[in-house]
Length: 284
Image 1: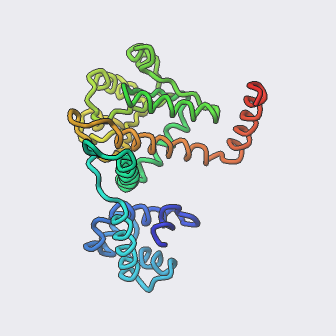
Image 2: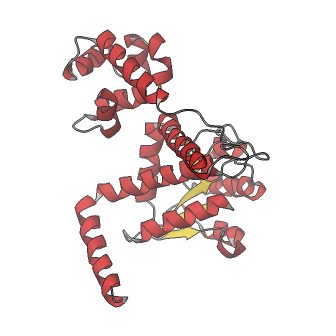
Image 3: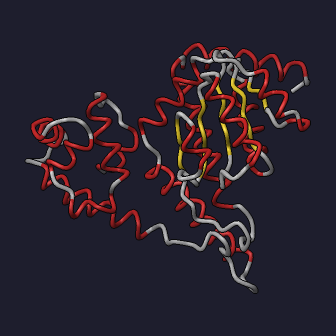
C-alpha cells in the first residue's frame, strides 16, 4: 500500500519525505493537484517529483495519483465522521457507544496527522532537544495531557516543568531564559495570562511552541512554532473532550517518540536498565 509507505517514510530521502508528507496532508485535493503545484509547494522541481514517482514503481505522476486516490477513498470510507460534540445518542447500547468512540478517536488521529505541518514538527523537536529546560503551560484537560508527557520524558532523562503546577505560572514565566523552551497546550488558545506571558517570552528571545486547534489566535500568531490539531469541538455543547484530548496526546506522543528516536539505542538501553531497577525495588 502506497499510503502505508508514506506513513512510515522508510528509506526516503529528506526531499522524498517532504513530497510524501505533502501528499498525505493534501489527500482531499488530489484530483486537482498537478506536478507543478506539488513541486512548488514542496520546494522541489517537476523532475524531482517525476523521479520520486518512478522510484515508487509508477510511470509518472498521473499513475501515482490514481493509486493514491483509490487508497485515500478506501481509507476515508472506513473512518466515518462522528460528531465530536455528541458522539453518541440517548439510549445507545454500550457497545454502540464503544464503536462510535472508536470511529471518533481513529478519525481524529487521522485528521491530526493530515493537519500537522512536517516542518513545524521538526522545528518543535529541534527546539525541545536544544533547550536546557522545557516549560509546559496548560490548564484543565491540557494540564493532564502535559502531565502524561512529562511522565514519558522522565523515562529518557528529560525533565519537563509544568508551569501551571500549584498555580505558579506567573513565577515560572519569570524564571524562563533564552536557553529554555516553552510549550503552550491550549485547545482554544484563549487564556489571558498566556497572552501576557508570550509578550514577555518574545521580548526575551525565548523559543515558543503552541499545540492548539486555534492557529488564528493572537497567542498562536506570536509563537515560533504552531502544532495544529483539528477544531472539531465546540466550547459549550460537547459531552466531553474526547477528540481534542486524543489529538493532543497523539501530537505529544509524536514529539516524545521523535526525541527518543534521535538517540534510540542509548534511550532504549537506559530505559530498560531503569525498568529493571524499578521492578526489583517494588518486588515484581
